[in-house]
Structures are given as C-alpha cells and as structure tokens.
Amino acid sequence: MTTSTNGKFDRTPLIAGNWKMNMDHVQGITLLQKLAWTLSDARHDYGRVEVVVFPPFTDLRSTQTLVAGDKLKVEYGAQDLSPNDSGAFTGDISGQFLAKLGCTYVLVGHSERRSVHGESDELLNEKLKAAYRHNLVPILCVGEGLEVRQAGDHVPHTLEQVRSDIAGLDAEQVSSLVIAYEPIWAIGTGEVAGPDDAQEMCAAIRAEIADLYDDTVAAKTRLLYGGSVKAANAASILGERDVDGVLVGGASLDVGEFANIVRFEQHLVTD
Ligand SMILES: O=C[C@H](O)COP(=O)(O)O
Image (cartoon, rainbow, N blue to C red; front, side):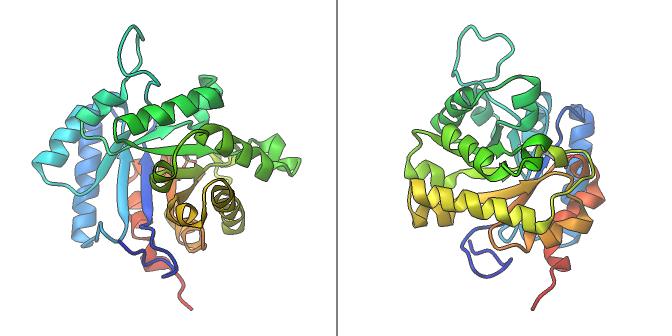
C-alpha cells in the first residue's frame, strides 16, 4: 500500500490508540463500535490510513468478537506481552494467547512499563523476540525523560535504547517493526513535542536502522510519534517526512477526537 501523506514513501500511515488501563470490556466495546461507525460515516479508507486500538487485556476477547462479527476494519493489539510462551509466570500473558485472540500488534517497552514496572532493555529485547515468534507486529516505544532532553542528550539516549532493544533481530523483522518515539515529558502532560522534534528523532532512528541494517530496511520500518497528540496537532506532526503515524493515549478515549486524528489528511496543508 502506498502512503498518501507526502507521496515519498511506501509506508502506510498508522494511527494507534493506546487505551492504557481505561475502559472495561463493556465500555471498550461501546467505544470501538462508535469509532467504527464514525469512521464508516466518514467513508474512511483503512487501506490508506491504518487504525489500531490497544485495549486492556480483559477487553480483547470482546474486541475480537465485535471485530469479527461486524467485520470491522479497525485492528487491535495488546499493551504488553510476556517474554515467555507458557509456564509458571503468574499474571503474565503469552504472545501465543494474544495471537489466538486475533491481535495484530503488541506494544513493547511503553515508558510506563519501563518506569512503573522497571522493564530493562534486555527484557524488552526478549519481548520483541517473543512477539515475532507468534507473528505479532511489535510497536517498540522509546524516548527520553525531561532531564535527558534538557541536557541535550535525547538523540544518543534514544538511539541507544533502539540498538539495545532490537539487538539480534533480522532484517525482515526490523522491516515490519514499528517504533514509536514518545518523549516521556510529553506523555499525558499536554506538552507536545513540536513537529520538528518528532522529525529530528524519527530521522535519527531511521538513519540508525540504515546503519545497522540497510537503506531498504530503514525505508520500510514505520516510525510513530506519541505524546499529547490531539486532532489539533496531529496533521502537522504527520506531515513530517519521517513520521509515519502517531501513538495516541488520552485522546484515543474520545471517539470524535480520535476519529479526527485518523482523518488527519483532511487537515494537511498541501504545497
Ligand atoms: O501510548 C500513548 C502515549 O503514552 C501518549 O499518551 P498521551 O497521548 O495521553 O500523551
């Protein structure tokens, strides 16, 4: 599929909604149904802009039933997975189970997993490998905190995360990988990194992948921005050359707002 965003790349824009620990399965189904209706009314072309939601684990079976029953084109994924496939890992969720629930994607290394749950780059590397074992497409989240940003070390810091997390993945895996740059200081704070900041980091990540693999791989890996994305700022961020999508938290819980982010092309300024 060819992106229509800037006509330069063969990467389909991806708009992802991370519900975090919000929406029980009844609320989640209502939200998803309304989103699908809203996008259907707007004649949204899912081949042109891909739409994915990340409900809590407990919503996934209901999500699967709704998506299959109503033949929805919205995709869904999980917010985390275990590095292990089965066994005595109380509370963990196997990628095998997520695949069985029809998940396409899985988030790996969200900053809230890294900070609240202390997940290390070594663990995240194992989680990425687990995702690929079960044909799940990982969305790897990376990004710096405020102190690192203020010290001007955001680029080397984030590239080090990328290098550590993807170590040992092959070119085919990295070609399908999605990486979300989410500066921690912009998550849920209303502080959005500017389009230039998003472009700077996405360009640096793409260059790093080209160095580690090659230009062909780097041209395929999709790079997202996340952090206080709203309908009002999505188009300018998504207009940047190396930004292929957005990972949306709070605004994904508001159907109208999220649908307007999905329909960002309506707000793009064309030359
Ligand atoms: O996963 C989403 C990010 O954490 C961004 O969240 P936010 O849009 O509420 O800032």
